[in-house]
Length: 255
Ligand code: PEP
Image (cartoon, rainbow, N blue to C red; front, side, top):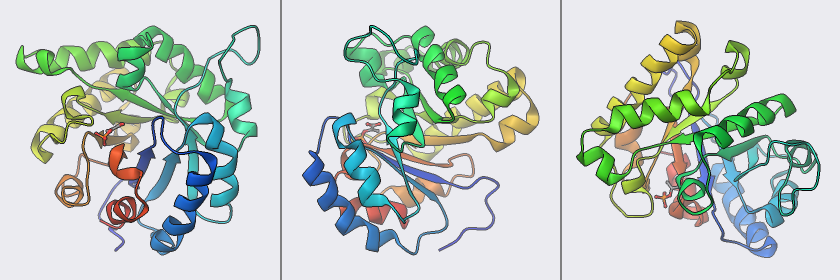
């Protein structure tokens, strides 16, 4: 049901991580599309693997579902074995790209500095970056959540112009809630979102902060999405595991 009281249009995004072949992606969209055909209250984004991007773009053609990549490199071409450039993603039909996901930070050496270069290159190519930030469990327990978020925010968005900043989406993903079944309570998530929005107001402008969409990510399921979306500070969700199943993801979209 459309929620016209919201300032910002929600975004429900699915991150498929390293799951689904092209064939599995096609099967997913065949089941998923009719289930979300009437959903106009939010933007829907799906981020398949690189190899399933073209098949997903083709399968989602004619629908409102946007396709995103899960990572990008900042150069437009060159001797960078294994990397994919922003303009290649645009040509493949992507509208958005996830940048700085905690799994990239944890396993593949992503830093705030590399995320920053990727964000700038993505925006320059016309892609919407979905920039992920979030603290580790040890950092939360040490009371360092805000300083970690501030460091990631400032580092990943360094030297962005206000116009560039207005093009991004943020995702607050506490690392201790990703794939663990342990969700941040709506209140904990909303507090972090408010902190990030205040940072945005101080770093860019009040207007840009007010229009910034901040998604929550971390074990979002059909059972907890309603409570999360009841928080005015939460503008949507970045969903991992539950986005792999068409029915579950559709139930989240249709919260
Ligand atoms: C994610 O991959 O960004 C994520 C939040 O995963 P999950 O929903 O499985 O916790």
